Image 1 (tube, rainbow, N blue to C red):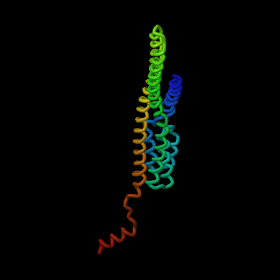
Image 2: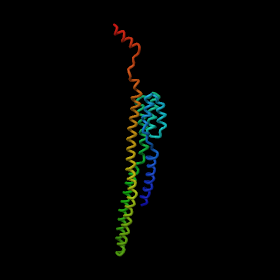
Image 3: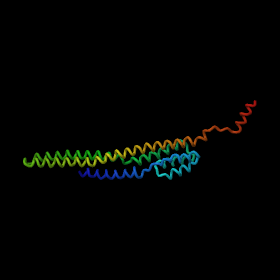
Length: 217
């Protein structure tokens, strides 16, 4: 039961740490974040877009800032995508780096409770076998009670840990899905809006005169 208690203390610590990490320290972008960022990008003001993204406390702000800063220095599409993917991976890892421990703690606590029950039952029957007949019933009931307490203690530790894991994992999945979607949208904005001018056909005065001459002939 001391081993179960140790896992119980660690479970409580991780539950508290994950709560602050996912619900207090992880900020979501405002509803008009992309619209404001798009306003800078559409005008070619990538430095202003980077400064605006930097001012946001949301995780998407750091990713958008990375892409805008690279675009401001004339970086290519592949470099922008690679660096934004790196920033996205770091944000996902930060959100999900300790949540899986709660599932492990819950499963181990359950198994330790079962192990304690089995070892307690084995000890009880071994003690009863060599005890006086008058004391066997008392010793057996006492041993079984102690073994069942071990199982109950393991479940008391395991259930909150597994419930917290399910809640936090759902929160992490929604956060990762939203963050990935917004990263893709911002990269597409940087890709298409910043390349619009370069993809437009350009006509010089020389080619225009040549076409006019050919028409006259």
